[in-house]
View 1 (tube, helix red, strand yellow):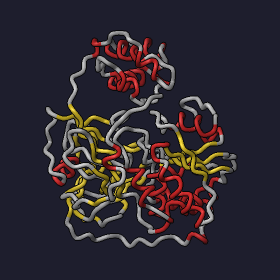
View 2 (cartoon, helix red, strand yellow):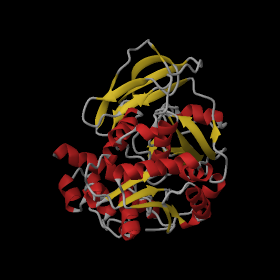
View 3 (cartoon, one colour):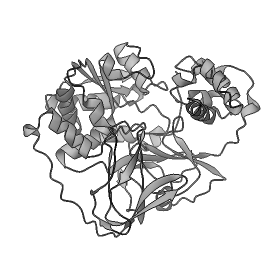
Length: 418
């Protein structure tokens, strides 16, 4: 692991701000290992918080309207979306929070499922499935507040500015999964939060241990976090709950809190806007589906893809975008505007830095070599499937070899050969 400097200090202590609602939202119908089916027809009017799509398989993922307006179903950049044109009337479904004292475990899982809550850390795994542990013993419930990605401070701002409902929700989940230990993991560089949060949870008489982690990347990655907190080494591809551990991002806890205490589905989240090319930096509460160009317009920024690289998520594991219509998803923690770098696969000088920093002890330079040649056997030989896509290799590469794009291309190549 390694330490990466960035602009976190410029945004972490700013008040969370709102932005004017966009003229329309673009809601992706791509869910976790599934395609969501629209439940609304083009041309009809929907209310804010109305259920508009869901998956038809066992994942049971749900999508809700973040605004009121007129529906269209569109294809954009190879993906299907529900587009809602904003009528700015803010007409909404009546949302009544459940009576917590009357809920059993299955009721709580149903509330989480019906609110459309998935992991906010990026992968988008359905949270109600993660928490449905039945009689399986869970020793550790880890709340991931590490936010080790450079630039991002959305989770910090949430923990710093949110209070009772966040920690009360942790208590509800702990009773649901019957975890023996509950740990909130944060980095040492955010140690000022420890005393504040410990005071809050003591006032609520909630048993949560706040554990400080090193400031190393990728400390917040699930497997590395589990190893640091519990000492357990869990193979990539296995389910942590089968080893007695459940990890949830702090943003996911916030979404559950909204469902439990306000009755509203997962339709908004906090996003860090930052980067050397960003004129305005901060943390903003945004509607899911907000297009990038609307955010840029509101902060006085132009869409200039030739001069800047725009990332949805963090700079290490995020996604570089080339279209301004791309939008905020439930797993988007950041919108970064960075310097545009020219990259070339064959720039590799065989220095080995990428292998030195790899937390999975892999050889990323070999992924680039075999991916560009379409050699799936070579990718399997060097165990590409064990890569967690943390991006550490790309960060340290002195030749700017596009290692992450090679890794993603390589994994797609392997899938086609199965």
